[in-house]
Length: 160
Length: 450
Image (tube, rainbow over all chains, first blue to last red; front, side, top):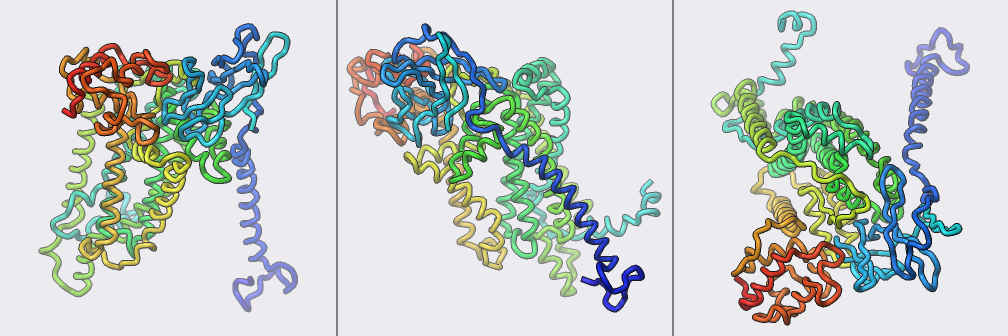
């Protein structure tokens, strides 16, 4: 790595780092450290909040929900009103379904006449518990954390 | 002033070498599309900066800030210019790409210019996509929700990419500020970084059309009669093209002002059905042709293949000839792709759910003029190529559910009236009474393909 062969730098006595190489290493090293420092900052932006880390928020009273009838409730977080279907099922207890279709995340609608969820975009159909009955969705509707404390219904983030 | 600068910087020789080179006669306007794209970008930069002075990037304020801007005539016009300008830029950059392809100008020695161009093309689409969310209206919110859901289908890293894009699982206020930063700073920076070498290479190597002329000059031939100087002759033609593009942009932005629509409603109380910007209609429509789980091919496979082909083109296409006549294979493939994309885009625009003009009840409706548009806009979203009953073509409509001459016996009518549950369209606003009566009149008259 000696740059000019045969021409030793005055400060180098033949041992250790030649001066030129020392300077070059310095330039690369300092730029590298600065670069890595900023990459570290950028890296923080590449770690989105963990799935399910949304807070538990009250969305209604237990008396507002009829048995086996999904009701769209509002979960206010992140500056928006998020849609969650809460169902008090007769066999599984309380469940909360994220209202985004798992195909391309259009909002699904509960159709009381046929007791099914339908997506208007590409015709995805789900049963009351979010299992796919037809259309392109690759998986059931996502479930969200749900708790019942006293008569208060509390919903949280998505279950993975 | 010029002399003062030249005395210090000795620019004139450099400028002369760049601007006074000969261009073959006749010079084609299609060779100036890159310059027109540059104009469109400059227009976007200027109107974008103006919009940024009024815009507030937050889920609570974004819509209102644009609404306040729209209340001012000039503000509304600037926004319209920016929105139309985005369409212009997408179209111009795409036409420029097609022209360069047709001319074979991506071949040696201009491979790097092509690569930079591909980056510029992708960054332009990125700007169009990220800009769509910023007004925080219903259209932008849901187009972004669906559009950013697509990368979720990439194997293994899909969900992670989706969460980075949105900064979470849903499109929230955090997504808005993220898109704002990318739209305002990251993508313009990428455009600048890619455009500088792109432009420098063109200056250094000249336009590919001038290569033959240069070769003739090297051989010592007199090229005077076959050429015109770039500056001022060709430059004037370029600026004329820009004038035409600018006039079209200004007129369209004035005559068809960009509306704002209703504010984003993540709960979607009004059952809005998302649609993308028209230049993404190709993908939107292609999705309908891939049944079931195969739609991942349209969402991930095809775009990925397109990326490889675009970036690898100078190396995939080993044919050294630049003359269109000697490249039948390359041009045929490209022609098929362009025709296919145009067809998909057209079909997509046609089938998009849109509010139909309230024409009242039509006594003697025609299938093509009155009935098909209702089906296309309200039904084929679900009852299209997939699903049990299709309403996309006359033949499919007539397969069942329609009894010519007897509207009340037709299941189709019972469904849209809600007499047989579930009422159609499923989970959406029913058809208007007028539309239902029009469909009944058409069946009463024999349900003809007229």
